[in-house]
Image (cartoon, rainbow, N blue to C red; front, side):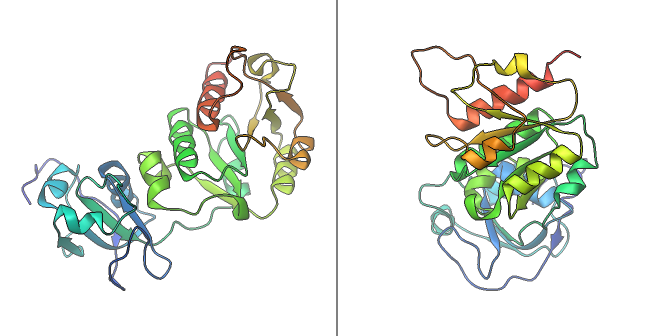
Length: 264
């Protein structure tokens, strides 16, 4: 493929392809990603093991970098790629099958930099929302997102596409018990601030100066009672009375912006 010699190699670890085509899901536990940003970020992620890339020639030319020599690549038509991904998914001429990312422990992200917030999601199950929250977490330098493994979407092409590359850069910690995870954060010195529409305090006024974990509940139901009890305080975003609530991904972005611009 004709690419500029100045572009760096895409560094991911290529692997041997197993299985055939699917309809938006990877084979044998693999993850199938699509779209330029998601695929390019995965190819550049040294923590990814790749199985195979299907692409149009235009899709390959759109990538910012060179594929490693002998990378498992198969050229395909747009219609062929459309059959490999979720219905009507904008694959942009690129479909990558790879291994899931390795699990990350909560202690690992808390040890890195306590000045960076942690985003905790309680039963946020829409993959588009989780992907959008990953993107906001990357934009505002959050340390990680934390979800309960049974009440969150799996790693997928939909999450990756919505995250626009952030799935590869923002640690995603999956825990068995969210309440216990919040206890661990408290023990590590994090102030746990939950977003709740019924709270009296405004979010910006409730922000502490030190390490913080922001807890978001699912749309409609909000945070579960036990999770709310494990927050140090609850606060609301001061939105207009003409609107009952915000989409959870929008609320998360606003909260992360408030943390990034807080004084003190």
